[in-house]
Amino acid sequence: MSKSLRTHACEVVYALQNQQSNLDALLKKHGKQLSPADQRHLQSLCYGICREWFHLAEIESKLLDKPLKARDQILSAIVRCGLYELGWMRSKDYAVVSEYVNVTVIEGRPWARGLINAVLRQFIRKQSELKMQRHGIEALWNHPAWLIEAIQTAWPDHWERVLVENNVHPPMTLRINRLKSTASEYLQTLVAHGIDCIAGSAPDSIRLTEPRPVHDLPGFSDGVVSVQDESSQWASIALDPQPSERILDACAAPGGKTCHLLEMASCDVTALDISEQRLTLIKENLIRLGLRAHLHPADASHVDGWWDQQPFDALLIDLPCSATGVIRRHPDVRLMRSESALRSLTGMQSMILDAVWTTLKPGGRALVTTCSVLPQENDVQIENFLNHHSDASIAKLDGIPGIKTPFGIQQLPDHSGGDGFYYALLVKSPPQHDRASA
Image 1 (cartoon, rainbow, N blue to C red):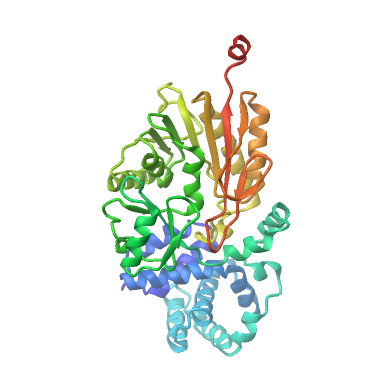
Image 2: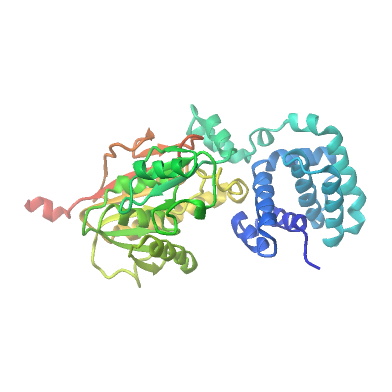
């Protein structure tokens, strides 16, 4: 017998509780067995639960007489799915209760049918009161305490705004392929098709009022337009590719920046990613847009095996990071990250910077970016790099919006703009003996 939509939802939430995988991968796995309508319901349900994760945990603890045993955590997933559907999705009470009671049997816990029935019915009676009460700081902001503290420390004047923005739905932003159209021309095309939109902050960007399937966008299949957050679009603008330049895009998947560079200038781009599967996404985008790049499945923290020893004119180094600037797009980030994981990430970032720096020619430039709002991965990382590389110096970033920091520019998530994103531009000095003879 095929599993119901709600059984799949409970299994996704259970996997998240145990950090078995990320949300997008779980939705892809479980969605294969569902109709398109049920896939959309599953995504809405699971994304919503992640956004309300800590609040739901607090409500669950109030409704249960005693904590569930470790071996019965699937029941916690069942409770949270039921709570969210009843309290936030306005699903029919009787259908929700009945189906989640049935899920307990499917998941091998028939003894818990009465428990799930009682908990969900109690929530129906008290939901207004329970939803209003948020006693703990984690339930109040729907973030783990360590991350709340880190953001407060990093951005004492902006931390509340960051946490609020992390909990809302992000805008859908487009990047217009300047080889085939302009933002102003395409905006008029969208308006003519009855699609509500406005110009974004980046030169090639348009922000949609309501998200919609990409294949509903005029010219998408012909490579006129792509989906890319406007903060991410500013990266290629900041690097400013020039014709015939040899450019490395490290950690490149899914390829938005790779393609944007090629749309901006007839440059020679090499794109790396450690995941061969994710490189396929870049290839698909290149084909759709009519562009070409050299793709290599490689670890950017090592140059052996992929680098031909010919130096690059410019580097775009989008470091793997905590993704704390894109929590509104990936709400499970708040569950999957930890302070210890952050320390491991910063170590990996240092290795990548050290490795790819060796491929840059003297006089070349390197743009370092992250989708993080945490200084440990941004300014602190750049300062440490400068302290260990006497041939590196900071260059000024002109025209890029955001908060100026000692070493770069930080954009914070904005409901009417882009995601949280960091940029720092480095320049490589000639060797000492070259400067001395100059």
